Amino acid sequence: MSSSARFSGVTIQNRRERERAERHQLIIDAARDLAEAEGWDAVTTRRLAEKVEYSQPVLYSHFKGKDAITRAVAIQGCGELARLLRKARPSRGESRLRAAAEAYLEFARRRPALYDAMFVQQSDIPWGTDEVPQELLDAFGELVAAVEPVRGERDLEALTEVFWSSLHGIATLMQGGRLRPEYDETRLDLLLGALSLAQHEDGL
Amino acid sequence: MSSSARFSGVTIQNRRERERAERHQLIIDAARDLAEAEGWDAVTTRRLAEKVEYSQPVLYSHFKGKDAITRAVAIQGCGELARLLRKARPSRGESRLRAAAEAYLEFARRRPALYDAMFVQQSDIPWGTDEVPQELLDAFGELVAAVEPVRGERDLEALTEVFWSSLHGIATLMQGGRLRPEYDETRLDLLLGALSLAQHEDGL
DNA sequence: TCCGAATATCTAGCACTGCTAGCAACAAGA
DNA sequence: TCTTGTTGCTAGCAGTGCTAGATATTCGGA
View 1: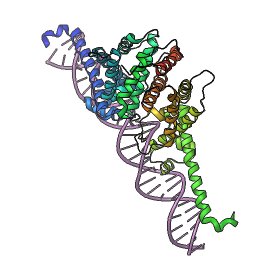
View 2 (view 1 turned 180 degrees about the horizontal axis):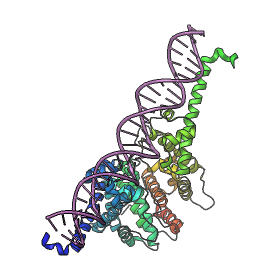
View 3 (view 1 turned 120 degrees about the vertical axis):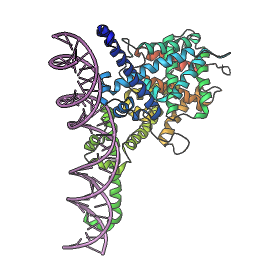
View 4 (view 1 turned 90 degrees about the horizontal axis):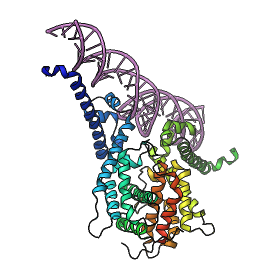
């Protein structure tokens, strides 16, 4: 320890930064875990602080406020979704569109709290043109790639937004118990059929 | 006044019930107005009580809790949406599906807080089979009627759920600023085209 | 090795939330 | 007029996000 004292100016700085980064991630993970286990209502600054074994003010030295923590969870969630979509290659005879849709809906079903933070809870994540997080672009990019084979003459980005919106609507209404579970399959078939097979001769 | 005193047993009861009902509605209206003016975060029991010019405990003599007030607002909102959809007859050359879609999206856009209470905030409104509020059935019924002309061989209820989900997805993602505004028209065209023109030869 | 300085962390508290117990004021019937 | 029962209020609880100020810890130089 003392033998490396002459490098301390750099290494200590490094160690501190590393520890800070680790704790930063620890907070994000704890928030996500707590939300997934007991819902976002259970994620209070006190419980979160208790879980990471620090006092509440420590949270505020890492994040501007509770919203910023949720936002961080959401962004990392987008990264996870992007990874999942990328891995979702269609099995034999299955369309890429269907593979993506199924992966998306399964993600929403299995990680409802995470999904909520990403796409339901309003947050000031910049979705406009400037400074959109890369994870988000990645996830949307995967959807674009899945839609591309069926685009026909249609605008690719707009069509992807329609695809995404439909999936999002199904995911959230399902989560709220507002759709009949026995139609789950039929609904997806209808959606995919409509989006992909539409001959669509220059619009209605 | 005193001349009708001999009927007081009944009339006073009536008057009281009427006044109670009026105040019940007053609370609901105040909550809706406050939410639409400043968002649901601003709807606290204190501010709501102040607005109806009673103390907080009065709220609890009408509703089990704050959630119940939100729920009441949501249900009446469904009635309003149903009425709007019923009025939304297509103009010349426009499909009924499009008229319904536009009315739905305009409702969501113009009454975001109300829409939130109805379809975004989770509530224990019974959506399952039993005891669904009539207002809800009405609204869904209007959507069914709009979808019917384009159903083809497809399952009407499931197709309506897809239609609804897509509209809901578009509405909520738009509201969150997650869709490009310049595609608003294109998106709707694509959706309607896909749902209505799909030849859909027995599914993919 | 020791001390002053800087950093890191905690305790305690504020203003707010939803909600409720218990009291005061009023109206109704005898 | 007095009793009784209802109605609405004041005051308070436990919990929320967040922060100021005090405290403990660690570091760099003599």
